[in-house]
Length: 363
Image (cartoon, rainbow, N blue to C red; front, side, top):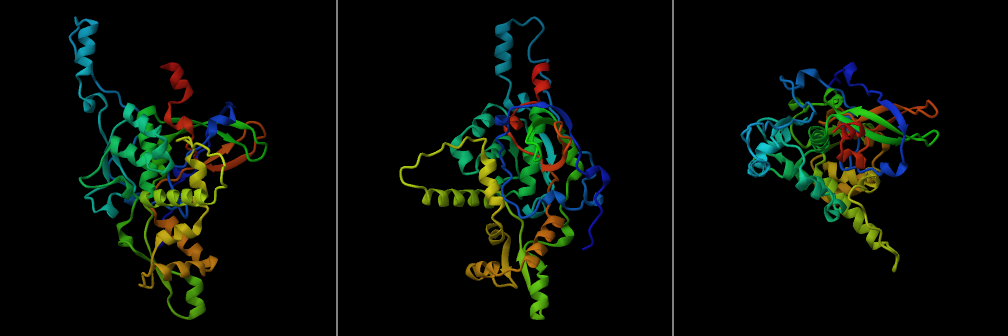
């Protein structure tokens, strides 16, 4: 399939620069889970986008001006306010997922979403859920309405990442303030990013590539053996990310020294855990590859993966990069201390769950 050209407006946008911040503010959480290649780097076809303008990440304020009469006392006003249904107090809106629902057997990819409230914040602060990677799944159950019977653990990782950014945008606004350490001079500076830019980087699902598992030919083994050698692959889900977090946790526990102190993991420090999973290509391939030329024996697949040539692994990466529905979270930055230009993945730090500083001051 020929690659579509990515529009200019989807190129990484350089963010605004501001002053230094404390490095301790940038303990990141990578709740998007493992991936073998950034889905957002894939080319985007304009013809595959939804017809209507959707996915504007901005706060929506409910209209509650008529809940009490103009002469109501404070007690009456509070009584009327407390009787307002949650659905009216924090209204629902529609979000269109990059997968367009194709891999969930939905009629479309629309999900009803509402801004985070107190229950959602408690979920994010629950250490038990954060340690297993399930906090985001519980957050989605609280703030999203999926088609009946659908569990958010079955979301494609690209949908999961986009939906998380969307929830943040409609809760705290589209301006996301975060700090980054310069790889050149190690200065920590604050940057601002408009989350609405992410809408222009969406790679929409293409029904033309067929259904899972997808056939990907392995060039090295095909040439070496003189026959068509291929694998059947699928897209990663949130459940894959959660299971790999649990697996990695179990390995760490098994290798811990007796008597060693246990470090309590803050619910907003999943970045380091998941980053280790990102680097485990073999674990990813074992989840992605469904069969080898139709053979689906798990032992055969695992043995086959261990013998893969880097050229064949790259072919799988490239296919996923070109076809995985999702967003491009790559941003280009410039260090205010040394003028160094560098590129990073948009971080999800603890400031992700609060409004930008100037918004907090203004309100």
